[in-house]
Length: 256
Ligand code: 0WD
Image (cartoon, rainbow, N blue to C red; front, side):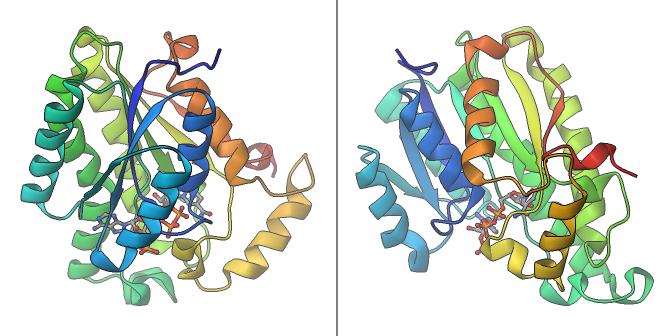
């Protein structure tokens, strides 16, 4: 029997087969969870529907996390279909391209800062607020994706580093807020993985190969490995873990 048998899970953030959210959704499905998936815009709809079919999910709903009405409609629909929710995966991040190329002091604009924090951090609070009543009394679990650039200065990660620092604090405050209801909130800090979002970071390819050489495991991580950790963290096996950032980075963060 799978770790997540009988659990209902919403996964937000699938953009392609390479997305971390895709690896997570697959792992949750493999462990027996029933899935609902979202797409950011019409362009991505049919692609996400394709994945849903593969994983026997018939709930594919729109959700641009910048839009409160869409968020509210999403959870209303989930409530009608499922009457509750056990797992929420938030695997969404964005900063305008020009913020991620060049000297931090020079390229960081007020608008870019706002957008990065809105889409990459505030959206977790917005989704958690709507998920809250559906998760009450179900040992719910909320999971988001972060990156080491929140703790250390990494070239070109720039304003995303600030947004991820905010996201990690968000995880701690949400965990404190929702803990009494039995809902846990955690983040996975993944090592670099080639996805659409990552391609937006200048010199990402070089970073990938340099990163691999410096990790204890001498390689980069895969979305399958992130997905497997996500399955554990969202399962009752992890019932004592909340407010944490768990690193799935082949050991990179401990290296000088
Ligand atoms: O190396 C990496 N790829 C790492 C990514 C290392 C550590 C963490 N992460 C994080 C990212 O910062 C992000 O929070 O993992 C999360 C998922 O990122 P990903 O899987 O690397 O990227 P991708 O496959 O592009 O999915 C992110 C998606 C967007 O894709 P695009 O390429 O269109 O930006 O986030 C979604 C979108 O589908 N997204 C939104 N979804 C709803 N509403 C929005 C939005 N407003 N904006 C972006």
